[in-house]
Amino acid sequence: MERGFEYVIVGGGVAAGYAALEFTKRGVSHAQLCIISEEPVAPYERPTLSKKFLHPESPARLPSFHTCVGANEELLTPTWYEEHGIELVLGTRVESVDVGQKTLLTASGETMRYETLIIATGAKALKLEEFGVKGSEAENVCYLRDLADADRLVNVMQSCTGGNAVVIGGGYIAMECAASLVTNKINVTMVFPEAHCMPRLFTPKIASYYEDYYQSKGVKFIRGTILSSFEFDSNGKVTAVNLRDGSQILADMVVVGIGIRPNTSLFEGQLTMEKGGIKVNGKLQTSNDSVYAVGDVAVFPVDLCGRIRRLEHVDSARKTAKHVAAVIMEPEKTGEFKYLPLFYSKAFSFSWRFYGDNAGEVVHFGDYLGTKFGAYWINNGHLVGSFLEGGTEDEFEAIANATQLKPAVDDLAEVGRQGLNFAMTGNKQIKSHTPSIEAGTSSPVVETPIYPWHATAGVAVAASVAAFAYWYGRRRRRW
Ligand code: FAD
Ligand code: NAD
Image 1 (cartoon, rainbow, N blue to C red):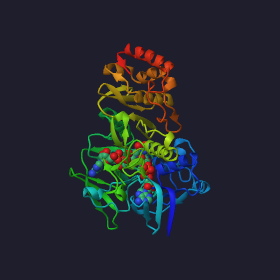
Image 2 (cartoon, rainbow, N blue to C red; image 1 turned 45 degrees about the vertical axis):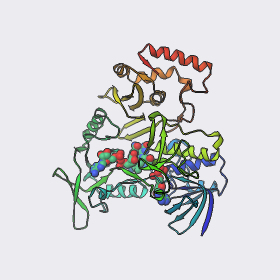
Image 3 (tube, protein in one colour; image 1 turned 120 degrees about the horizontal axis):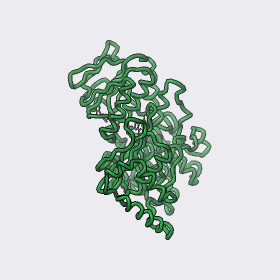
Image 4 (cartoon, helix red, strand yellow; image 1 turned 135 degrees about the horizontal axis):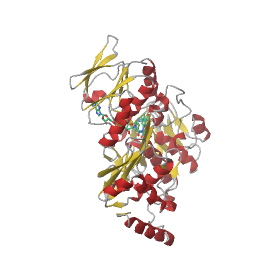
């Protein structure tokens, strides 16, 4: 069997869902677009799996969290795809792609032709076996990447109420799952090799705030060591975790969150790879003109950071996906992808956001004994990153805008003293030029001009920038 489509998306996760919506907004015709996904369900908001999906009361279940509800847009149920003439091929793995011939082969034996291919294959969870530990297949060892994993985690969790869970890792999955396990009345011990949790982003001071709170909820932290092996009972269930430091922890269940690897293997040797992902240009186009890549798998230029980056976060998956549909459907009207990185997390009653790049020196601000605090990252004399816990929408918007403007900072202590006001007051001066905030995620849509003094700026803008620069100059920092 052989079929052909104008546009084919390989992978049916977050990026595929947002791309589909944008394709329809931009007038894709019936039977032009096909999405092929290994998962048996239509694209959904993956972040829900480690949050509301694990709630003991009224947990989220499909269809309520199909894309694109995470950005307060339409809920794309399987019927939506049908009504819009989008071919959704579910439960089907793409086994190979020939980018020279513009064909792909699915696990069901179908060969498909395409004119344009969008790679949205995301990533897979790293397995313990990659670190020389056996036991991932045990029935009470859980990973969390897709809906099947989440269903399994819920079942294991429900069979362990009052018992002990060991969470391996100190990153996003570990922190969010640990909070959910505690909420489900399970005793949690977290084990990770670093000196504090969330080492890829948090400073020791930020980490210590969350670790203290988790400890107050009963979570134990074992830092600076890793798992060396499991103990099993006669049914093959894990009963204890042996650590490299020689200690042992009893376990009724284990949750593993030790990072991911992008799904690039279909394209190895065919497309240019970098930083573990598929390298794309500002139009999200790979080294082959007919092939684009978005989401977790794509390595793209991020101007604010001054380098190419691969991001593993939902906001960038959504926005690269929307942008690629625009590039493909309206090439002459669509510029390069301009992006301000946004990472966020929610656990217990916490909610934080980080914008930009966590490079350079850090200035902490706010009340680290209370509920609202943050940090700025200053690199080469410019603000490049901002973190805020417990902010209002206005405050999150303010730190996003300030970060995007990359103001010069020559007095770190003064910025620390001003704290949130540094971003809030600065933004008032440029309010009319700030990028719009996408509903639901409060992430700035930066396809609009970034800097007020960019080419489109007129006299009024120049005047306000001058006033603004003067105003800020008086406060010993320059935007
Ligand atoms: P994915 O959403 O992973 O989709 C990839 C799809 O491609 C999958 O359906 C996969 O089965 C399919 N696929 C892969 N290979 C093939 C193949 N050969 N053939 C067919 N199909 C294939 N980010 C945040 O910013 N905030 C959060 O709170 C947050 N929470 C998260 C919680 C969890 C539990 C997880 C796992 C991730 C979370 N993330 C979060 C990260 C975010 O979900 C990802 O960045 C995002 O899903 C990436 O989107 P994607 O479309 O690139 O990949
Ligand atoms: P991660 O990269 O956030 O954390 C991995 C952690 O694993 C490291 O911090 C380290 O502590 C630990 N680690 C590494 N090797 C280890 C070993 N051998 N033994 C023990 N610990 C080890 O990855 P993750 O938490 O697994 O998350 C997976 C993916 O899902 C990431 O892409 C992440 O961005 C995404 N995610 C994001 C969010 C969010 O943005 N709120 C939430 C959940 C998941």
